[in-house]
Length: 381
Image (cartoon, rainbow, N blue to C red; front, side, top):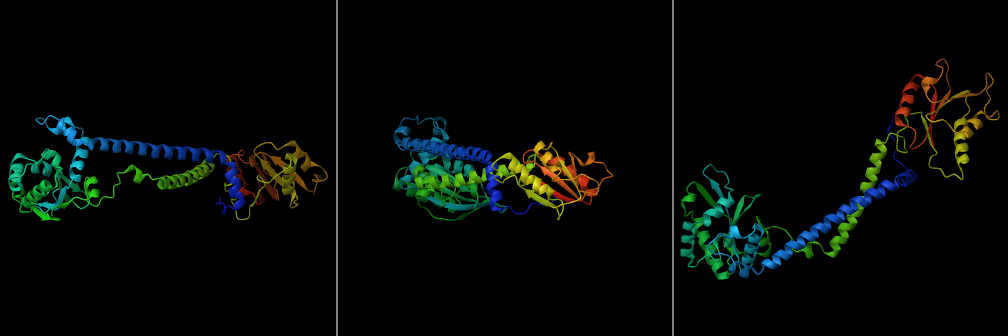
């Protein structure tokens, strides 16, 4: 079976018309899922912004907490994270460093590093050098993050006080850069950046300073972007519908316009299924004309379904077909296997009805016709 040649514009139009329902249904489904997705995203992000606004008053929140209990036991992880970001906004300081063990392997345990830097011994040393306490809590004021791509750690300090942030960050920097702790005995520290004020985009990143994370819902979902994404989604949905329709036609058991009817180079394929007719008989007349031309001494007409009586009567009319010996003759059959094997034909005409004739039947007839030397003509109606 040969692949069908590239479709013409008319064939594409007819394909779209034939499959308009499945295309529209699929487009609406895909587009609805997109709208639900973007709606849910806007809703959840607005909730996050709402929580952020609430936690901007974290001083009141912190004052209500039990200072004798760990903050982790009283706050949700998201609340802790947002409070830390708010503390870092007021002149928060940060510096970065890379650390290796004695085997030359990168040290990536930033959580362990965070625990070390907020341990009692380290806090005592840092607070003595800084000359100030780490408020409101070391667990909230000190944060160590890891960039998984560069394997660089970043220490962030945020107490809500710019001057204290500078002093504490310098103290931590001196301790880490000089490896002033038994923890660093089997490790080597490489300083990447010195203490500097945290930029706004660095505050929003949990791991890397150069984060392009947008947390503002209005910025992420401006009207222009929503219109653009909606247009793109609509186009993708339409093409998705066309693709589904194409796959459906390829997998369909019945023949369609895009089915490859030609099994040989000299096969004649005539598609009259998309022609416009004033009535059914006009369509049949075109089919009869296609069957009768060109004139041959003998013709075999194959059709999976019984042909309309109008077609049979017209073909057998004595003015069109003569059945006397040595003159033109025509034979109707639903299968090659039902034909007398002693007969031969100048032309075999296979009538296929779109969305009705099965591919299996057609392919069976073509397989059986391989032993015939007859011309093959396929008419799709």
